[in-house]
Every structure is written in structure tokens, then in C-alpha cells.
Length: 315
Image (tube, rainbow, N blue to C red; front, top):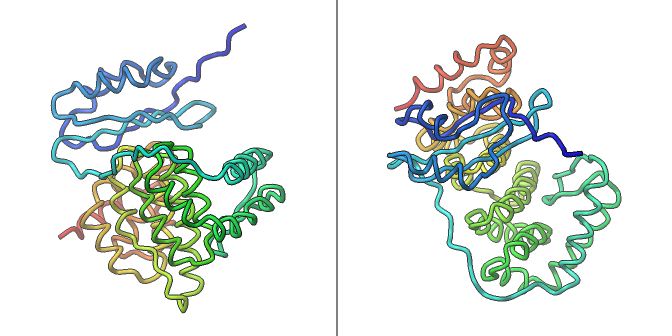
């Protein structure tokens, strides 16, 4: 007996400004209610063949009413571009005990849902088994700092780089952790970038809680990430930017207005309310509106009013 193919509840787009959505939908070959495309790569190739498109990226996300959400990312010619480094190629590995410990952590993390404590400047799970392993990463960094940095920068193995990015977030020297993880934000692999963002989000929380520490997480690269082809990059960046713009941060707000306003607007209009909300809230801050007023407009279903307030302020 075969398993039913996941059905699509929502198809949404980002990066479409000049090219009609109808052209991309034709190349996509599926619509709401259909099964997901049988070949991600072949579908992306068809979309890439449309004149004016540099590259596309499909990402299926769970769930809306028990069905999948299919995000179609487009980079048009001349559009803002999130630049990534080429993947390194050196054949180097972390010490085996680090890899083994990280895989044990992943297995423990999958045993039920758990919340996270970010207040220490690194992620600590409320799942006791996962947390116990996470607490082992701080002495691991102390012993193997050179190996972790070497692998992060030079290993051709993306899993090894992702492990290094995750573990480096547990460095007791939090300023050094910021430097390493900001480097990892430009990695060619999405998994490495995801672990880097997770670590930087915790560091941003610590910096906010303890301003006397002098710890600083820059908003710039997260703002650039809002122009990424990857849905996951965008959603993770939005989470960090909510922390970095909570309170007075006029520099970050101005950068959002100048460098990512279009991306915020299109994400704030996504059909999935859960996914649209973070971008919408940031647009409220770009508009200079109190968070409470922005939330009230959301509850009334008046997203467009806040979008209009943010876009009319563009210089």
C-alpha cells in the first residue's frame, strides 16, 4: 500500500517584481490542491528558463490546514542578491567525539517538542536529555577551538561545517562566537547558515539583556538575508531582526527601509498568517508605529494599512 503524496494548500512567491506570476505558475506546473512537484530540480530548471530570471528556489513547508505550503523564490535580473561564498574543498574532519556528540544531541532533540532558553547567549533546550548534551559543548569548544574554526572555514564536508557552526555558538568568549557565526552566515550550505543564525539569535538575546557586556550582533547581514532565495534564510533572519529592532535601533530600521523594504512587503502579504506575521511586525517598526497599534491592525485584518504606512516613508 503506497503513501499519499502531500497536497499543496498554498503556493506563494517572493522576488517577483517584473515578471508576471502567471508565467512562473505555468512553468511550475502545479497549483493549489495538486501534489508537490515530482522533481524539485526539474521544476526549478523550467522556471530558470523564463527570460529575466537568474535563479529560482522551491521550498515546501508544513503545514496549512494539513496541507503543504510551497514557496517559490525568484531572483530577477538586477534584483538584490544575497551573496554566498563558494563551498571550501579541503578534506578535513572534526575529531570523531565531536561528531558523535552532536549526532547524539540531534537524536535527543527529536524525542518530543521542547522550548529553548536563549538567555545565556547559547541555545539550551528544555528537553533534559538534549540540554545535558548541549552543556558538554562549552568544554568541547575550549579544547578544540582551532579544529572547529578550521573545519568551519575550510572543510568540503557540509555536515562537518554545520556541526562546527553549531558548537562554536557555545564558546565562553561570546564576542569570538559572534565573529565565527557571522562568518558562517555566508556559507554555501543552508544547514550551516541555519546553525549560525540559531547561535546568533541567542547572542542577540544576551546582548539585549546585558548591554554592559559590549556584545554586539550586527543587523546588516540579516537584512541582506531577507533577499535570499531561501525561505528558511528569510524566516530565520526575521526572527533575529525582531530582537535587534526591539527598542531603539534607528540604524537597523533605516537599513531595513533602504535595503529590504520590498522583501518585507511581499513577505507580509504571504497567505500563511504564521509566516507573514514577522515581516509585518518589522514593517510596523519601519513605519515608526507602536507595536500595540500594529498588532491591533493585524487583528482587524488590516495588513495593508501598515504596509502603506511603511512604504510611504521610503525616501
